[in-house]
Image (cartoon, rainbow, N blue to C red; front, top):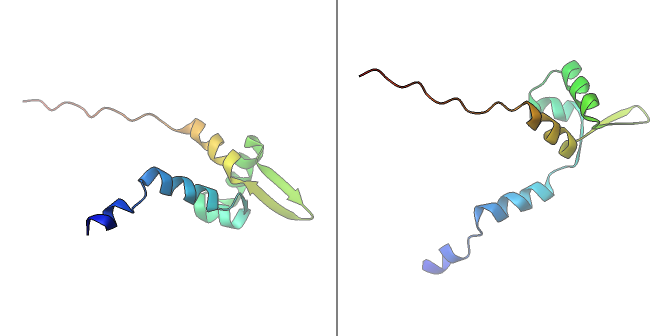
Length: 85
């Protein structure tokens, strides 16, 4: 039983391998589903990020560039208000 626990990889290793396996380029329909952003806004953001690739009528979005761009919009956590006693 103890040997089973020793064989489990640390969570960070699992995350890194999953990141390597995911698709680098997404079609815009896939990106709409993954990011839950409407088509027009998605293409606008991807264009602003420099993550768009247009090849013979096919639009691809570089996921790594787009993810990095989206992180610029992250808001810091807000401290909870203290209760009155």
